[in-house]
Each structure stands twice: as structure tokens, then as C-alpha cells.
Length: 575
Image (tube, rainbow, N blue to C red; front, side, top):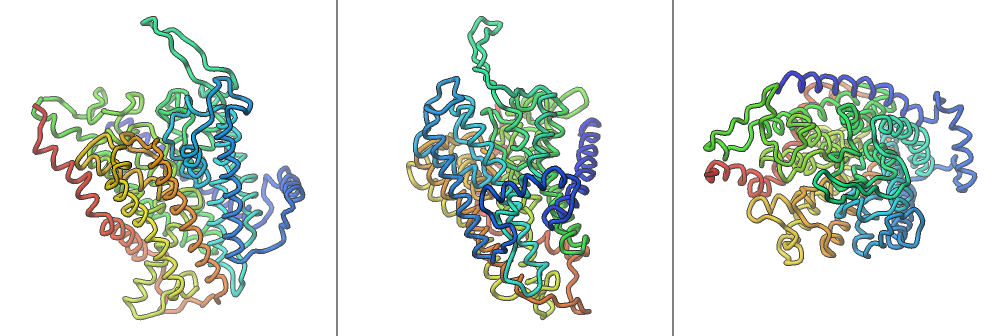
């Protein structure tokens, strides 16, 4: 690592910490219904929204009512988006006269954006009109992370409330998440991106002539508004096919730096919110410490793998050493503007969360380098994770961890004063098992069936990694692609769409059921026999459980995929 990379990482970590602390405390006040600095402006707007929509803000919902509201709200959003995509050819703001999408692709895109996955098996600039981008995708880029916010806050209330059957009001929570958090931040970030050179207009594409005399169509449009919420809401769906590697999405080093921060900052801030709302900030710091340990370990592995270059090139005498004057390493599929370190940091961050935006093609990473983003998704949305999803995702692991700790000492497991009993553990296990069922079950089915296998661009270990990566990305609602899989087929659009739905709502329902069960329980005061869940021992145990789950569950697939491909580099050198 050269000195510039080291300084950038220090700045990245420092600015993220400085932003997440006040953001986390602010969000705690928002969801607790306490006065905020934005309240004087936004409180009347919130009240107006309730009056227009007919929402009774004072009404509380139990877990099943809350889950029902989540399903209905997102089902309506999916239906509206599906119709927009199917009929964009007759809707306004379509200067390129792009046709409507096929049924299978419209289904995949609609599901993708309501589940916060933003998986894209199409090229945005040649497929979607401005109307579809703005009133279709961008609206869901706000509402899908707002849903994650709402569910996470409902789960937190499950730990905080004593002997109550309710978890809050979904429509109030999703409104506050959108109005007080996502909209103001996205507005400020969009203005910043426009300053940096990201387009924001409604003009037709520009026709230009290259230096070779070839005609070229230069795409533009309402880009900045979509990129801002794409990054802040851990959405990841790009306006352009090249995503954040496109100079119109990510034009400068400064835009790259703050987009990278925006991937993590809200997910990390929600852990601070958790500590504040449960009345013990140490609990939030313990979760954040576990997330950060995993993130740093994966970042180091990814960077070393990419910086080491391709072992097959050793026989050719190619110098792959990274210095201040030589980019070195494995530069295949990477933008020379960003280099090895930025590409590794971005790949780790975008898959540790559920953002999925990319500045480098993961299909071109070294085998061990590509193992890192794949592993990050396989363990679920827990290493920061998506907005909201990361918090309730790691809390599932917390319940399993305290259950294991309880077995070790022969006591009923507890967390935050709530006894963790058979119902909660069963529901947590169901939520955890959905990921391997989606990845290994549906992924292997796609490999075995001819309609699925024909999407591969490679055979052997790399082909296996391509397919497993696609289904891991869908199940974890990440949306990043390995870039070598042709996913725009009827088979893949339908299969991946189903996996995205299970990965999102199949987890949300048992998580809310856990929260509802916990809310009804008493809070038991801590005693000498209570296992502390804020110290080093708990952090180590939680981190170990996450690693073991990912390692043991997926080791055969990882061994046959990226690990086998890595070993083959030493046995098949380039001649």
C-alpha cells in the first residue's frame, strides 16, 4: 500500500466516524418522536402527509399488523413500478423513444428495487426512460431503505418495550425515515454531486464525433438525483451500465471519496441509534466493533490478493509491485483513476453493506480477491449491512450467540434483559437458513438446468463462482453482479426475482415475529450470572459465530469455486 492509499483510508475512517455519531443520535430522536432541529420545517409536512393518506399516526400495530403493512406497502410499490416499466413507451420524459420492458424483465426490475437489491440485468442508459428512472426507480430508492429503517426500529422497540403487544406504526416509521433522514441527506448529496460534474437534466442524449471520426451517443439525464439516494440508501442501482465506474456517475476523486463514505455511514449510524434507544450505548459499540473487525479483515485479504497480482504472470517477468509511481497488482477490470486500493476498499464496502455499487468488475478480480465480496454477502447483511437490514440482520446473530453462550453456562440466555427462549431461537434460525436455501438451493438449480447454465460465460471453478455470486447477491439484497453472467433471460429474471423476494421479506417476517414476542416480555434486571453483551468476550464470540456460519455453510461452494481457481493459477502459468 502506498502512502496516498494509507492517508485515504485514515480519512475515510475518520470522516465516517465523525458523520455517523451525530447521525445516529439524530435518528434516535426522530424515531422516538422527540423534537429535532428539522422539526420546525418538517413537522407540518409530516402531519399533512398523514391527513392526505389517512394514516392514524397514534395507532400502534402488533407484529403481524406491522408485517402486513410492510407487505401491502411494498406490493403496491412493485405493482406501480411494474406498470411504469411495461408502458414507459407511452409515458412522458422519454426523449430516446425507448420501448417498454418485457414482462420478465419488468418483474425482475420491480422486485429488485422494492427489495433494496437494485439488481440490474439491463443497461440503464439504453433501456429505461427518464420517467422510469425518476418516478419509478428513484422513488423506490427512497421507499425501500425507508422500509429497512422501519423494520429495524420496530425490532429495537421489541427489546425496549415491556409487556406490550405493539411495535409502533409502520406508516409513521417509513414516513419519518424518508422525510427526516433520507430526503434531506439526498438533497444535499445531489447538490454536491452536481457541483462535482454529475449531470442533472432532461435533455436528449448528445451526439458527438470521436477523434477517429466515429459517431457516439453520449448519455445524460437526471443522474445526480438518482446517484445520491442510490448510495445513501444502500441501493446501488446505477443510472449507467458501468455504475460508479462511469465518469458521469463518479467524475472526481472527491466524488469517489464521499460516495464511498455514503455506502456505510447510515448503516453504521443505525447501530449508534440502537445503543441510544436501548439506553446502553455500549451495546451499540459492541455490535459496531464486531462489524468493523470483519470489515477490516476482509479488506486486508481483498487488497493483498489484488495487490499481489496474478501468480500466472510470474513466469513472464512482469513487475506487479505497487509503488507510488507504479499501479502494479491486478489491474484487469479496474479504472486507472481509482487503482488497486480504491477498488478493493469499494468492493469490500459495497458487499459488506447491501449497496452493490461498483467501480471495478468483480469478475476480473483474482480468485481470492473475488472471494471477499462473495463471502461478505454469504453471511447475510451483517457487516454493516443495508440501511436497517444490517441492524436487524446482526441482531439475529446476536440471539444465536447468546443462545450458545447460555448453553455453555447452563443458564437461560438473555439479551438486554429479555429472556431468549425457544420461539425466538427457532425464528432466528429460520431467518438465517433462508440465505443458504436461496443461494445453494436456487443457485445449484440454475447450474443444473440448461436454461440457467447457458447464462454462464465461463466453465469450471470460475463459472461456479459466477452463478453462486449472482444468487448470493440476490439473496442478500446486494445487487452487485460478477459481470460475467448473462442474467437477462426469462429463466434468470424469474428465478433471481423470486430469490430477492425471499431474501427480503422471508427474513423480515420472522424478524418482526421475534420483535413482537420480545415486546411482550418483562425486562429482567442483570445479575452476577448474566452474560455481559458489551465486552470483548461477547465481541469475539459474536464475530466467531458469524465467521463459522459463513465458513461451514458455504465452504464446499467456496472450495470448488474461488479457492480451486486460486490454486489453479499456480499449476497453469501463462507461457
